[in-house]
Amino acid sequence: MIERLPRKRYLSLPSPESCALYISAQNHAKSILKLAKHMFIKKKNIKIFQTLTPLVTSGIWPKTSSSFPPLFHPDGTTAISSASKAELFSQTSANNSTSGDSGLVPPSPLPSDYYFMPSIKVLRNDVFHALTGLNLRKAYGPDGVPPIVLKNCVSMLAPCLAKLFQLFLPFLLAGSLPTFRVTVLIPQTTVL
Image: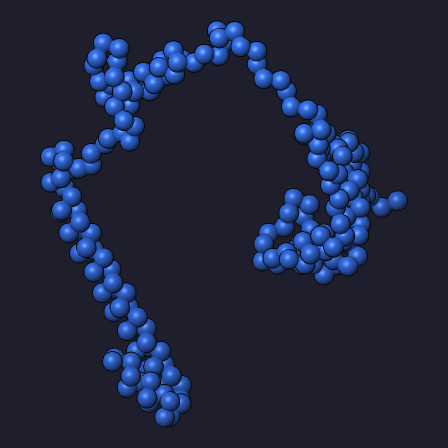
């Protein structure tokens, strides 16, 4: 309501003065709404605090209870605390475990062809689609190449990167990488 009259003046007669008046009224309305919002939230927080304070000080709330059902000690007493429940549970599990003392033969391992995984192929189209889907607003990777360079040069980079990934894949699956020698070029500042 505050900013309607300045807005009408600005729309009917656009001038620097009416524009300044409109912007001033708009900012004033925003500040009043912001103040009202903060006051409302402050009143709600005070009401919540006043409601919860007696419950917390009296010990009614929050009730800390375990979701684990009660466990009973061998002597018939109930384990109440979390630590005693954990200790009793581990003892019960250890007592009920039959591994090692049953005399049964452990199961035989699965055949080696069960674990067979077909060879992985890194295709040019997969690399192409991955590079074209890069978000240009994201930060550079550890290689320091901006995403816009990768995205703009995707037609040239996709075949090379696909071949490079395919060459490195056996090393990655084996858990090791070949060692590389790094050469750093430093320009000389002395004049000969």
